[in-house]
Length: 383
Image 1 (cartoon, rainbow, N blue to C red):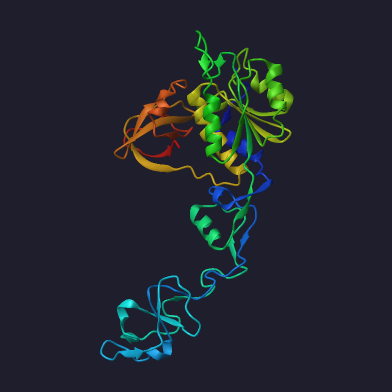
Image 2: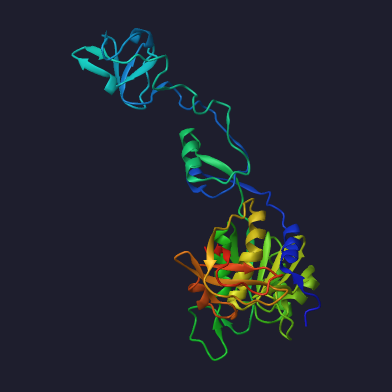
C-alpha cells in the first residue's frame, strides 16, 4: 500500500519547486539556433538599414524640385536617377517618386506627384540603430529572429545549454529492440524511447541508459552514475510490489518527496532528488508513463530549459460521457472529429494503441466524478 497519496497538482508543485533553470551556456551557429533560448541580450553593432535605401521602384529626386507637381501640372526633371527597391539612394537625393507617378521621356522625367523629404525611402537606422538591444536574454529564438540577426551580421549567438536528462528504463522483462525474438513474459523496451523523444522535443538532451534489471544495487548505480545530469527519469518499478525498487533506492540515494499520486492513469509515480537534481519515477505502463510525461516531466523540463510551458490546446465538445474516480485527476484520451472530442478509452494504462488513435487528452479535475456528453472541454494536443 502507498503510505500517502498526493494530489496531482500538489505533487507537481513539489516537483517544480526542486527544478532550477540551467546556468550553463554555449556559443552556436546562428542557423542552428531556432528554438534555443538566448543567454545574453543581442546588441546591434550596425545600423539597419546601413544606408538610405529605396523603399520601392521609382526615381530618386530632390523633393524640393517636385513642389507643385500634379497630374495637370507635371514637373520636368533632368537629374533623376532610376531606382529599384533596396538600392542605395545617391548622395544629394532625398525622395523617391513611384513609377506610376513618373514617365521618363528620353533624359527628362515627367513627375505628376509632389513628394516630401524621405518619401519612399527607408532611412539609415530606421529599423535598428547601432547599440540597440535587438533581443533580450531569455528570448526563445524563432526563424524571423534569426533572419533579423543575420541581417545585422550575426554569425553566432550565446544560448543556454539544453538540460541533460538521464532516462533509465528498468525491468527484467524488457528486451532491447532489434536484438532477438521475444519469449513469453517479455516485452520490447519502448517507454525509454518515448521519453527520450519527448525530452528532445521539449528542449532537453536525453541520455538513455541500457535497460537496468530489477536489482536495487544496479538501480542505485544507474542513479549515482547520472548525478551530473540536470534531471533523472526512471521508468518502471515504481509501485509498492516486491520488485518495485525505484522509490526505495531513491530514498536511500537521495530524497523521496512523493510516492503515489492521485492521478489516473499514473498512480504509482514518485518524485525525489539526488544532490538537488530532480528525479522522476514513472510507471511502467506506457499510457501511464505518457500521461506523467505530459503532466509532470514536460513542465519541469521546460522550467529547467528556460522555456514557457506552451502546450498546444483546443476547445471541443465532449462527444460522449466520461467516468472518472472521485478524488483522482483523470487523463482521458480523445480523438478530435468535426469539433468534437471523442473519448477513446478511459481505463487501460497498458493499451498503447489507444494513444496512437488519440489526438490529445482531456483532464477531468479531482473534484469531478466524470463529465457529461456535450460539455465544452479543453483538449491538450499530443505533439
